[in-house]
Length: 181
Image (cartoon, rainbow, N blue to C red; front, side, top):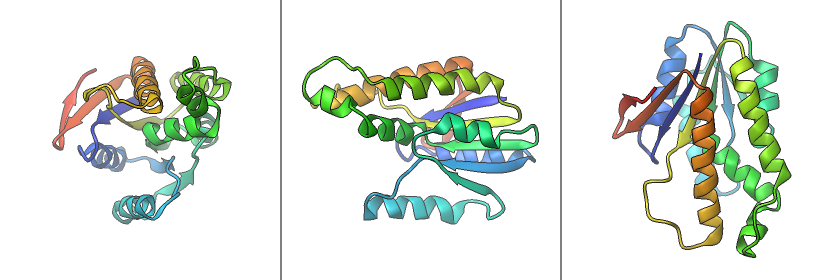
């Protein structure tokens, strides 16, 4: 089964994903997409690490998520991906997308398109359980900066595509889960 858990910042989505992974009874492989590029992000990563089950296997993959999932998926495994939002941000900043957005050019980013398509194509084929965490960023105002608008647009598109191939989609607000699908 594939599940997408979405919500705002500090909504409780990661806690819910971790609880569901623990309750699965399967061997958990935690796939982290964050990169500790500054002290604040390092603290965030440490916070997540401190509350995770010590028996869980950790895979850090900031860019090639589909390959990491393919390598670690198995019928007796629960893959927990935290999170698609940071993965998308990594992809946007790894390629030409940011400079194109800042220059007002149309998005032409084969790396981003290929990586997201690879994920969407792979998810329905994976054995075992997959829990994906992602931020819902579309409920605020339209951002002023071009790169922020690009990110919000691409995050919304990614969430829609992932939700379409998941059997369960859960929205978390104020720590409360609401089943959408």
